[in-house]
Image 1 (spheres, one colour):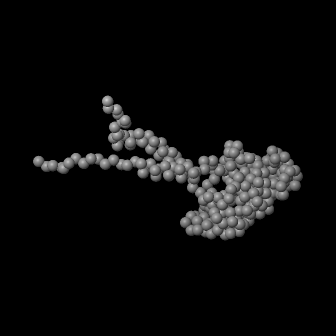
Image 2: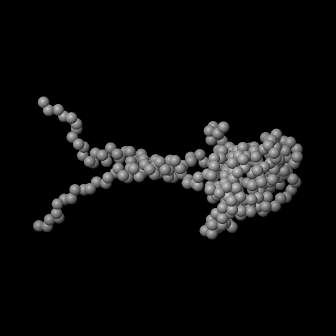
Length: 148
Length: 125
């Protein structure tokens, strides 16, 4: 008696047929994440921002990070060097953009535990770096659950 | 009679490498995205121009609470106490943090004042 061990090999277009729904879903997810993502430079260190009822969303052109000890960084530069790099980045940005009519926005992402006196002490340096519009970054209240 | 030659077999697109690439892109965008929208509060500081007029409006933040022109005020009363001192909603209010006040406390006060319509908050040392 002859026994059949396996089905005959499938036709090649069957592969495409059962992959198509998968491709649909993956493309959908890909487009979703591409649209939802705003690419940013990675932070130089971890910062846990305060929570706020503010409604304005963050669209800063530059982001300065300040940790709970008052150490601040922009991209890879830390401390006073960060302010110099920031000032340089602003000058570069202003070559293409209208900085008189629409001054660039600097977002300051400070840790919630940073003494506010240190934040205030930092601000004149930002003015010297040329920034006229500074915004403080916070998380919305709804995100509070995740932070201790 | 003209002959067009043998009918060619249609070549199928090989989907597997495309799926590999699309998956890699998907993983990249998933890892790099942060879906919680961060919020911002505009902040002015000394030397950014603008003038000050009217009676003093100095809000000091200490570890213990808030003072308005040196007088302790509960935070929920702050906007009500400040409004008689304001001529316009965009009159400057000076915020001065003291020892013991952290950024979260600063945000709490700024939220209170912003909710009351005071839009020009100046942080001073």
